[in-house]
Image (cartoon, rainbow, N blue to C red; front, side, top):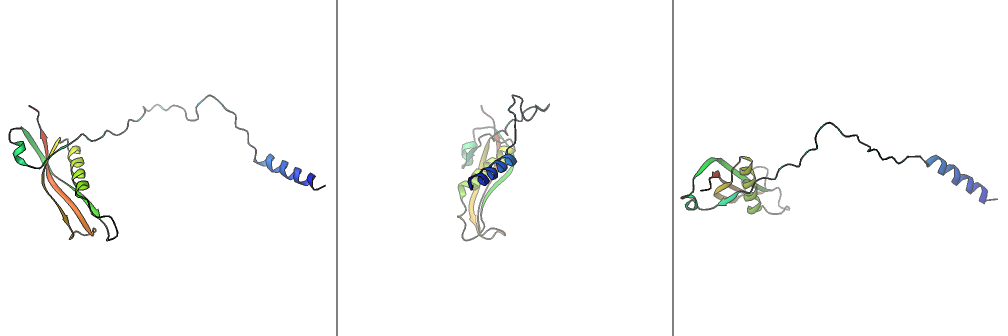
Length: 131
């Protein structure tokens, strides 16, 4: 006698939950008239020059100053990294269509507002012509 109410309960619960979804070969989202988006282009590699003497025999154009930084927000965060600041400087130079950066200086400063300590790199973005 106990078996019959359990079967009826199970049958009513499955009847409420069951939904019919036919499988079709048509896509759920129709093709839009917009072309597919291409991924954002990666920044072009930017060569880093640490000595101005390396540029003496090469023709180049100065595109302006560029800087990169890495901030340590608090004492518990990981320390600032000069390599990260240098890489960010090179990425900013690539957005200026530069293919080289002449590094002026990289240093760790602790007097900057908003950062416990900060690695800062400064340089000149250059467009070096190949000969």
